[in-house]
Length: 201
Image (cartoon, rainbow, N blue to C red; front, side):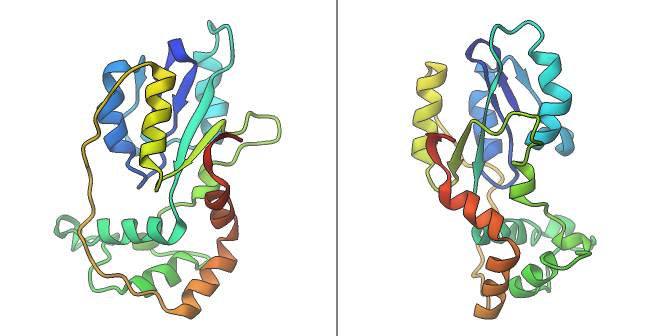
């Protein structure tokens, strides 16, 4: 999470949306940086509104606007799957080694996913209560250039991005029946991604 006090902007860090790369590039310009632990770095909108916003807005003349990035749900799950293929965790319960991508997605959709399929929900990350402010700006992960341009204009800076936390390359096979079930089960994620853009929501 990055807070830009002078620009009244907070960049919420959705996992697996290149947030680490943006944090690295924008850290010199932020007034507050939360890089760890993961639970704080990747704090969702509702938790931010309830816990952090009241603290940082005490001396602000205007409410903070929020920005986040959402990734196509299948691609997002693919990134999680590949990330958990790495050898460093091969003997741990959250490893996806020896598990097919299709099985990973099936388990993700289950009522009680095993550790390797517990990766959260992009729609829940972006959810806020009726009494709290919704996300202000939401970009598709696939529009990196648009996001970069927006940040450069809003923060009045120029910066370069370097790839970080890149998951191992791997061909992913998702059976049509599984994809259809995912579309039904996670329709809210697909809808939010489809409607995301460089516009004010």
